[in-house]
Image (cartoon, rainbow, N blue to C red; front, side, top):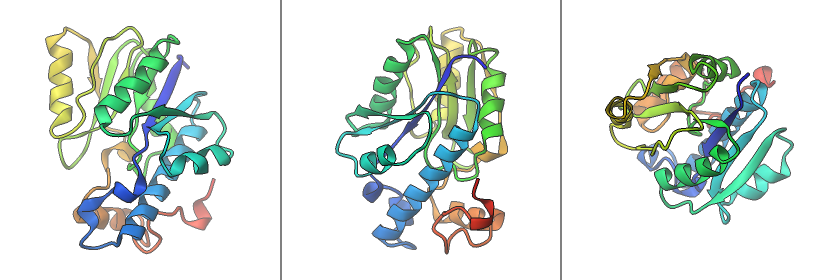
Length: 216
């Protein structure tokens, strides 16, 4: 396995998933956000990657929760917590300074598996080639692997998948596009929540908590 760090940005849960406000209360959206993040962390921990960074504000309410749980090779890196791209760029600079590639994974891809993560890493040819994973619904980027030697600037947000590919092409950077199933669905809208329920009945009632019979 090449030297790769998983980078998961962590937004304050009380400020998350506002597009679900017509269906879920603030506390329910917060719980859903935390449960999805735990799913992503568990998949990361079960992968062959030995360094997992959670990047969030030092005042994020989840920092103490994460640091207090035994998640294996997981560490918290303080960032400003105000802008996603700034946070990824700040945390990735620390990672790349250690000579490691990084794979950005959002905290709201509830069906991700360790195999999905390893598929992305294998596609990078030992961390030398960019890998982008598109969202199935909104043109976003649901994962990306960035080689350590690159000065790549993240362009996360609206239509980011196209912009990331154009950035790579404009800078003559080799890249691959892959679509592991667990990465393609990120939960932002009521339509996404319906899709989650189709994949995993009871998902909504549990607010994304892992079913007891599937706990690893």
